[in-house]
Image 1 (cartoon, rainbow, N blue to C red):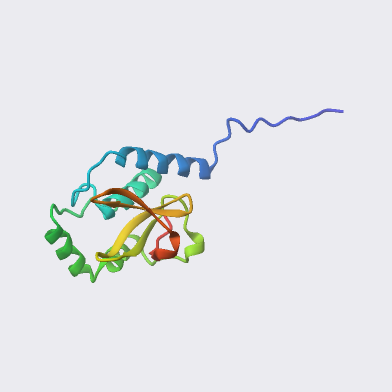
Image 2: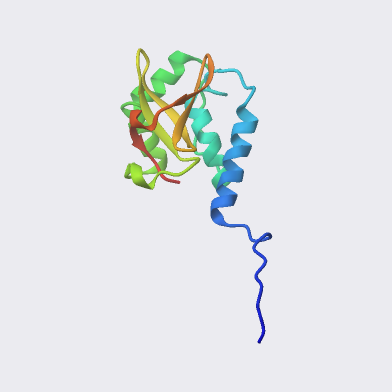
Length: 143
Protein backbone atom coordinates (compact mmCIF):
# COMPACT_ATOMS: atom_id res chain seq x y z
CA UNK A 1 0.00 0.00 0.00
CA UNK A 2 1.29 3.41 -0.93
CA UNK A 3 0.78 6.38 1.31
CA UNK A 4 0.76 9.75 -0.29
CA UNK A 5 1.89 12.65 1.85
CA UNK A 6 1.08 16.18 0.83
CA UNK A 7 3.39 18.99 1.78
CA UNK A 8 1.26 22.09 2.25
CA UNK A 9 4.04 24.19 3.74
CA UNK A 10 4.93 25.74 0.38
CA UNK A 11 1.38 26.22 -0.73
CA UNK A 12 0.45 29.89 -0.70
CA UNK A 13 -3.24 30.60 -0.73
CA UNK A 14 -5.10 33.64 -1.91
CA UNK A 15 -5.97 34.39 1.72
CA UNK A 16 -2.31 34.30 2.76
CA UNK A 17 -1.34 36.61 -0.09
CA UNK A 18 -4.08 39.03 0.93
CA UNK A 19 -2.96 38.96 4.57
CA UNK A 20 0.64 39.57 3.53
CA UNK A 21 -0.45 42.53 1.42
CA UNK A 22 -2.44 44.02 4.31
CA UNK A 23 0.49 43.56 6.69
CA UNK A 24 2.76 45.34 4.20
CA UNK A 25 0.31 48.25 3.94
CA UNK A 26 0.12 48.51 7.73
CA UNK A 27 3.91 48.33 8.03
CA UNK A 28 4.38 51.13 5.51
CA UNK A 29 1.88 53.33 7.35
CA UNK A 30 2.97 52.47 10.89
CA UNK A 31 5.03 55.58 11.51
CA UNK A 32 3.38 57.87 8.99
CA UNK A 33 2.05 61.13 10.35
CA UNK A 34 -1.45 62.19 9.32
CA UNK A 35 -1.25 64.61 6.40
CA UNK A 36 -4.03 65.43 3.94
CA UNK A 37 -3.33 63.98 0.51
CA UNK A 38 -0.44 61.80 1.68
CA UNK A 39 -1.50 59.85 4.74
CA UNK A 40 -5.10 60.57 5.70
CA UNK A 41 -8.07 58.24 6.16
CA UNK A 42 -8.70 57.93 2.41
CA UNK A 43 -5.06 57.33 1.45
CA UNK A 44 -4.66 54.88 4.36
CA UNK A 45 -7.66 52.83 3.22
CA UNK A 46 -6.33 52.94 -0.35
CA UNK A 47 -2.94 51.60 0.74
CA UNK A 48 -4.53 48.23 1.50
CA UNK A 49 -6.08 48.16 -1.96
CA UNK A 50 -2.78 49.14 -3.54
CA UNK A 51 -0.96 46.25 -1.92
CA UNK A 52 -3.71 43.73 -2.68
CA UNK A 53 -4.47 44.73 -6.28
CA UNK A 54 -1.30 46.51 -7.36
CA UNK A 55 -3.17 49.72 -8.18
CA UNK A 56 -4.02 52.79 -6.13
CA UNK A 57 -7.50 54.05 -7.00
CA UNK A 58 -6.79 57.37 -5.25
CA UNK A 59 -3.70 58.19 -7.29
CA UNK A 60 -5.65 60.70 -9.38
CA UNK A 61 -6.88 62.51 -6.26
CA UNK A 62 -4.54 65.42 -5.67
CA UNK A 63 -5.06 67.52 -2.54
CA UNK A 64 -2.87 68.91 0.21
CA UNK A 65 -5.26 70.44 2.72
CA UNK A 66 -8.51 69.80 4.52
CA UNK A 67 -10.19 72.48 2.37
CA UNK A 68 -9.04 70.83 -0.86
CA UNK A 69 -10.21 67.42 0.42
CA UNK A 70 -13.59 68.94 1.35
CA UNK A 71 -13.92 70.39 -2.15
CA UNK A 72 -13.32 66.95 -3.71
CA UNK A 73 -15.86 65.37 -1.38
CA UNK A 74 -18.38 68.07 -2.27
CA UNK A 75 -17.86 67.38 -5.98
CA UNK A 76 -18.70 63.69 -5.46
CA UNK A 77 -21.59 64.26 -3.06
CA UNK A 78 -19.70 63.07 0.02
CA UNK A 79 -17.39 60.25 1.04
CA UNK A 80 -19.70 57.44 -0.11
CA UNK A 81 -20.10 59.08 -3.52
CA UNK A 82 -16.36 59.49 -3.91
CA UNK A 83 -15.53 55.90 -3.02
CA UNK A 84 -18.40 54.50 -5.09
CA UNK A 85 -17.20 56.51 -8.12
CA UNK A 86 -13.82 54.77 -7.91
CA UNK A 87 -14.78 51.29 -6.61
CA UNK A 88 -18.39 50.74 -7.62
CA UNK A 89 -21.31 49.96 -5.36
CA UNK A 90 -20.71 49.02 -1.72
CA UNK A 91 -21.15 45.38 -0.76
CA UNK A 92 -22.86 43.50 2.03
CA UNK A 93 -20.88 43.62 5.30
CA UNK A 94 -20.65 39.82 5.36
CA UNK A 95 -18.41 39.94 2.25
CA UNK A 96 -15.80 42.28 3.76
CA UNK A 97 -12.29 40.91 4.25
CA UNK A 98 -8.98 42.19 5.56
CA UNK A 99 -7.77 45.09 3.46
CA UNK A 100 -11.22 46.14 2.28
CA UNK A 101 -12.02 49.86 2.57
CA UNK A 102 -14.92 50.75 4.84
CA UNK A 103 -16.67 53.94 5.82
CA UNK A 104 -17.59 54.69 9.43
CA UNK A 105 -19.29 57.58 11.18
CA UNK A 106 -16.78 59.37 13.42
CA UNK A 107 -18.26 61.64 16.08
CA UNK A 108 -17.41 65.25 15.31
CA UNK A 109 -15.88 64.45 11.91
CA UNK A 110 -18.60 62.65 9.98
CA UNK A 111 -17.82 59.99 7.38
CA UNK A 112 -14.29 58.61 7.65
CA UNK A 113 -12.57 55.83 5.72
CA UNK A 114 -10.80 52.90 7.31
CA UNK A 115 -9.44 49.47 6.48
CA UNK A 116 -10.78 46.11 7.66
CA UNK A 117 -8.13 44.22 9.64
CA UNK A 118 -8.76 41.19 11.87
CA UNK A 119 -12.49 41.82 12.30
CA UNK A 120 -12.07 45.47 13.22
CA UNK A 121 -11.59 48.74 11.40
CA UNK A 122 -8.32 50.66 11.49
CA UNK A 123 -8.60 54.39 10.85
CA UNK A 124 -5.74 56.86 10.29
CA UNK A 125 -6.28 59.97 12.42
CA UNK A 126 -4.20 62.90 13.60
CA UNK A 127 -3.60 60.86 16.77
CA UNK A 128 -2.33 57.81 14.89
CA UNK A 129 -3.93 54.61 13.64
CA UNK A 130 -6.98 53.88 15.76
CA UNK A 131 -8.90 50.57 15.99
CA UNK A 132 -12.70 50.88 15.78
CA UNK A 133 -15.40 48.25 16.28
CA UNK A 134 -17.00 46.95 13.07
CA UNK A 135 -20.47 47.86 14.33
CA UNK A 136 -19.63 51.44 13.28
CA UNK A 137 -19.33 50.47 9.59
CA UNK A 138 -21.81 52.36 7.41
CA UNK A 139 -20.61 51.01 4.04
CA UNK A 140 -17.87 48.75 2.78
CA UNK A 141 -16.35 47.86 -0.58
CA UNK A 142 -14.93 44.41 -1.26
CA UNK A 143 -11.83 44.49 -3.45
